[in-house]
Image (tube, rainbow, N blue to C red):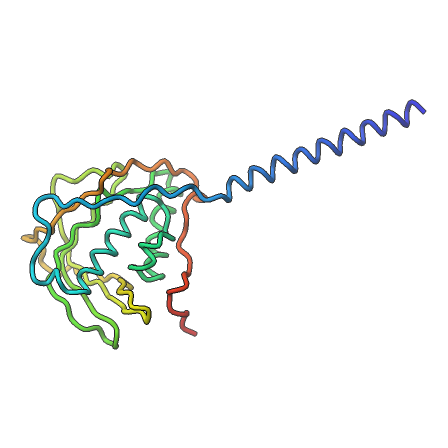
Length: 223
């Protein structure tokens, strides 16, 4: 009888331990899957006079600037599902942008951040190859870094933003083409900074990066 009681006690103890492990593991998994609260979207403050050239009134240029702003915020938050990004940036580009912090973490680096939208000087807007598309050409400064500091020198390079016009009315950057042959040596893209300034990233695990995903407004994938 004593042996039976001992065996039953051991069995009940083992069951209780197993249930505790399942509960703890499940709780940790739930915490891991829960998305971190998104910080407030920052303000954008122009350093000096805001850009006011005639080309700035072009809707395609305005859309390109909004996309550059959202791209920088998404990179700083490591969240590539932000509504502001989805509204202004195509799916393929969002996916490509989300790979940058993943690569940084894989290389044991802190993900880069940006002090503000990449400075951009638009130079030309022309229709794209198909209806509902356009190309915005200009000079852009890529200034992402681990610290998010404003560099002493702003070295611009040539770029074309390929734009798309969705049926719901959104204008978005769908892809980016670099133009190394374009002379941007004398270009002075206007500078804007985020307020508050972004803090260096504390992301060390790829699971904490919110990757881009298809949204309702994204056109269906080509067959």
